[in-house]
Amino acid sequence: MNTTARIKKNYRFIKFRKLVIVSVLIGFLSAFLGVILKNATEYYEEIFFHQATINPLFLVIFPVFGLSIIYFLREYLFKKKENKGIKEIFESTNSKSKNLPSYKIPSHFINGLLTVVFGGSTGIEVSTVVASATIGSVAQRKQNVFRQYKTELICAGIAAGITAIFSSPIAGILFAIEVISRKVTRAFLLSNLIAVAIAFGLVFLLDEKPLFAVNITTWHLKAIPYFILLGILSGLNSVYLTRSVLFFKAQFTRIKIPYFKIIIGSLILSSSLFLFPQLYGEGYHAIKTIFVSSNEMSLTFPLALTIIGIIILKPIVTSATLASGGDGGVFAPSLFMGAFLGLLLALVTNTYFNAHVIPINFIIMGMAAVLSASIHAPFTSIFLVCGLTNDYTLFIPILLVCLISKYTAKMIYPFTVYSYSPSLIK
Image 1: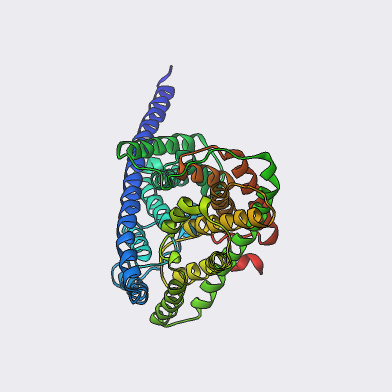
Image 2: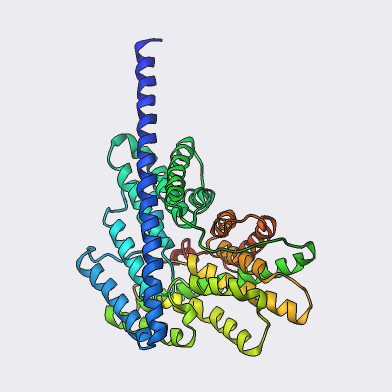
């Protein structure tokens, strides 16, 4: 082997070794951030929500207080920059010059936590994704050897963050592929597999439990027509959610005085929470409740009205939360809407069509289906929801409803909140 070949081989080995090391660090830091944010949000959201149920006056105070704090933090601490969510990641990966600044890590961490804890009807998932993407972006800028791996290292942070909050390494990698990168290179596989392995190892060591403890027994072929119907309805609901978010953001952009946005958003949020406290925060507490009681539920007019009201209002309060300055996205709202949509369909078919479907199954499939249609990522949604329940019994029906919901939504409205841009429709 001549000297030139030896030098090239040594350089490739050094580059490979450095990529492995940086992937380990990104995986650990992103997962650590995700676990802390998830547990802190769950802990404080429970405390604040409990106080709001005891004294409904807090349903007025919490939203305006939380959104005000977020505004002042952005104005005086985080360089007066608004958080654009996942669009920030696209701007970075699509440009050689644009990078995710390091302050995005504390910005999304703190603002995501405050938004949900004080009742904002969204979730921490997008906050975690952007913060962990920034970890990958910062690591990529540390050495020239990593410049060519910008997208790969950003995706490694994202995949590790998703793994940490949903306990599903497959969902983490699939989200990075389906939503962010949309291509797979050897460097992508190496960095992302290492990052999610480290993240999942941390989750295992910390003994993080699945978010929803459910007992799934079986599913029946005779329910397939109802699965198809659920997929179609989920696609329609996801379009409603997407259009609501885009509409509210466009309308709130016209409001030039920031505190008017906060007041209007808080009024919408508070009045909705008075009607349906289930809309508070991520809403996972409400999903856990219906998991426990779904098999004993019978359809009554007040119950049907409540579920329909929740499904209709959720996109509105989510949109108001985000448009008035809250930090978050459509992950948790999609899961929430899907759970209640699945429950409603199961109760209706059992009551009026004697279908004998299993409500828990429809709750889980609804969660995956609406998420799949909202982010146009069916395979991410399958493994993410299976990771949430730590059960793959429903893999095949979830695959069916996720594909149907995605393509139903795309036929009606081809954009997601991540891919939409006003220039695309001109």
